[in-house]
Image 1 (cartoon, rainbow, N blue to C red):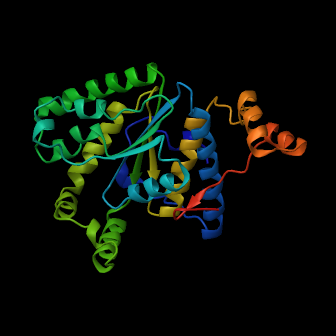
Image 2 (cartoon, rainbow, N blue to C red):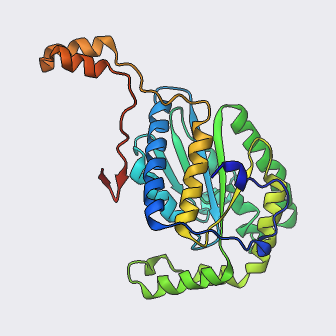
Length: 292
């Protein structure tokens, strides 16, 4: 499942997307575990280097962004993996340029940062709900492209993902949330208000992808009626894009550290040989918060 399969190269027609593949549960679990392990190795390879990555997650309400964030969190160390759930700007942020609040959350060196919704709110919800003028949201296409080009040229690996589901699938998931006490907290008035503007959002999404899927920062459009398939597609794209030209070979142990450890731990020659081995380690992937 190559990332180029999902890259947006022309204006998409969301209503015409009929192919929503599924995946068997056993295959899903196996592939997810493998991809989580790969992402863990990528994160470790970034540590202590100038590498940094930025993941932009967009999609329809109930499309599965939260599930993807959770599964990233199960695999990645929170010390260098950050998630920013983006809500409506507060009073102070509304007085600033809309991009300013995102500047403060960009990844530092060695970090991987995920935005659960992003600056694309300017050309989506703010456009549809009339919170930005036509002049403002039209101008935002150029501003966003320049912003992202600057990020990429400065060394940030930027991956943009949009999860697409059909209207009928969204209704099914709304009903599931309404009847499941554990999921009910996710349901809000805004969900139903946004659904009433489905066609307006569809046009805005298609415009957004046509205007901002660039060579340096392309959109990846993922059919997500099947949550397992959507997750595997997202993790595969992330592993490919974030791991490109990155060596995942373990770094050799610092000889000075090994010397201290030898004394402190009374290491045998066999212990020292194992510690010096640069073979590929088994990735320890977290599942539901537990290491396996």
